[in-house]
Length: 155
Image 1 (cartoon, rainbow, N blue to C red):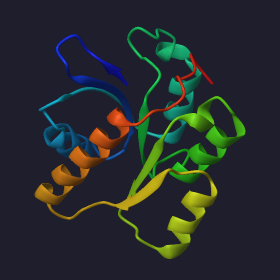
Image 2: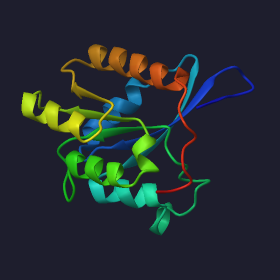
Image 3: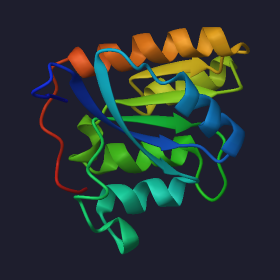
């Protein structure tokens, strides 16, 4: 998070979501006032790890900066959100990046496992657009204003 000259807070957000409809919904729901959100999207867990490691087409950190926060879908192809959390916590530099899990599942065992693997928070995906927009606004404002260690250059 950095404050821009215009007084807005800027936040680099990596979204890991395999459902294109959910990505469109998220883009529409982004807060517009007071926050400058730079959104990057990947479709599965292997792309999250490639992005964080800065490999392949993610090597250009000007185009693909390290995220200030990760919004991670739980059920994705190749590697799940749990797999990504496990990998992040085994790579100390990445373990400091705030990671928020979103899932259609509110199963207690999923919530417990996510927190055990180091998720910073877990949300069941809201069913209404208005509720989702309100949640996203609060969530991104919180992380934009919070004090965190500097993001690593890569993991």
